[in-house]
Structure formats: C-alpha cells, structure tokens
Length: 192
Image 1 (spheres, one colour):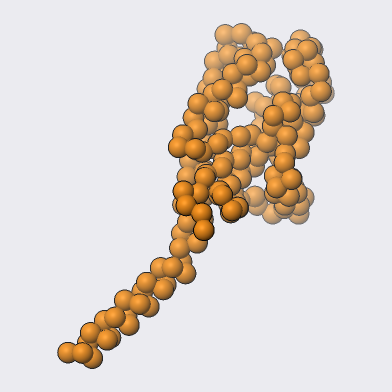
Image 2 (image 1 turned 90 degrees about the vertical axis):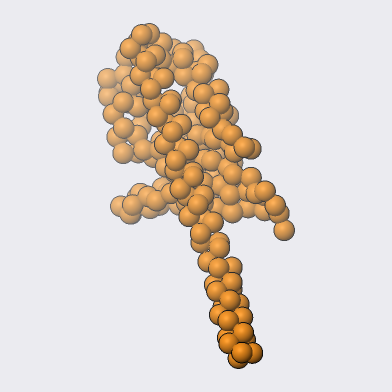
C-alpha cells in the first residue's frame, strides 16, 4: 500500500513540476490570444467609425474625426487596467511615439520585413506587465490619409493634416509598409 502511495505522490510531483515549467509558455500564449483579440476588436471599431466618417464627412472630415475621436475610442475599449495604444516610428500624434522598448520591437519587425520573413505577434514580459505587439500593415484604405500626393491624396486632405498635425510624420507610406504597432499592456496581478 505504501509503495502505491509513494508512486502516486511521485507522479503527482512530476505532473506538478511539468505544469510549473509549461506555465510561462501557456501564459505567453494566453496574452498573445488576448492581445490579438483586443487589437482586432479595436481595429474593427476604429475602421467602422472612420468609414462612417468618410461616408458622411469625406476624407478630410474623417481626418478631423480621427484627430478628436481615435484616442478616446481606443481608450474606451480598454478594461481591467489594460492599455491599448497604436505606436509608430513615423507618428501623426506625438502621443503615439515609440518609447525605448517599443523602438527595439519596431526594429525587430523592420528587420524581419526587410528579409522577407513573416511578422508574428509577440509578448514581452516586464516586471509589472505583459506587453503585446502586433504590426499595423499599410493597406490601400490607409493611403487616403497616410499615403502621398503621388498616391492620389487629395490636396484638401493634406491641408487638414497640415493644420491639425503641423509636425506630422505619418505620410508617404505604401501598401505593405509597417505603419505602426498595436501595443496592448496587461498589468500583472501579482509581482514577485
């Protein structure tokens, strides 16, 4: 009887140890899934709002709408201490500038893209949080506000961008460029 109890305890200990060892991978996977879900939902909400603004106010009106509403819409979707940001090397709004950690991740994505490798979402762990990054890839619709004159941007749209964002850096992108990154920060509930 004691022999079976010892064997059962041994298997339980091995099982417990393997759970501990797999925990970081499972945790990373959880944040990758949650981050992607949040980024997708936020993108869909912003896209629908911008399309509606374009239909009702034109492209120049959509730029004005984005100037006032993009950050509040993004922030309204954040819950439970999670922050949702769009950050970029060439930003329109200074609030979207890369910090030093974002810059490192930006460079990794840029190098992968330059080599022709696929870009996959990542999670980085800090002392107090898990940070999810997902590249924002330039698509034709974005060219209306982030392209250039050669791509057919309307002069009135450029005039509105110049008036609202005098230090704008978010022009001149072409289809397939990395235009920005989704950055979603999950606070750790407990720290060591």
